[in-house]
Length: 207
Image (tube, rainbow, N blue to C red):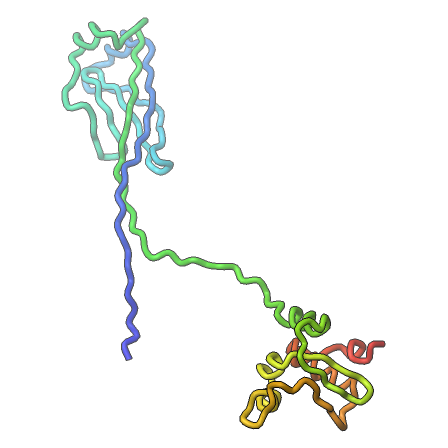
């Protein structure tokens, strides 16, 4: 017998974007810090996981993302071009750094769990028996009569199944006289058939 099972998974790639506004006040003082020096922004988060920062170099305008990974504008601004533009106002420059990170995840077959409440079938069947709804059979035990359901009795007892639905059984039987059994014992047996539990002695005797 081949008991192997098929499995599946998939790779999902998506881009996560994040932006950070970086303001430098006192640009005229910062530009004199020397070539290769930089002013770093605060750390910001992209996609809730990736920590990034942006740097302003003394010569070009450049963005540095993460550790060891550098991305940015491919053409540098000359300082003279930058200072002649509208990007600097009141000796202040504002940069909006937008970072896009491609992340990949593996998805397997999701396992669903369903909360199953404890079984109360026995209580439901007991309530059905006590309500006498749908009963199609009467047991006459001494001076007492007990109503029941032939299908439930047949499902729970091979003796009743043979009596009602066997080769020599009678599915139209609507009354059975039970001899040599006291009513309290028969009631206990009937409750056990419906609930699969032994009833309390007080429940049997009614006292």
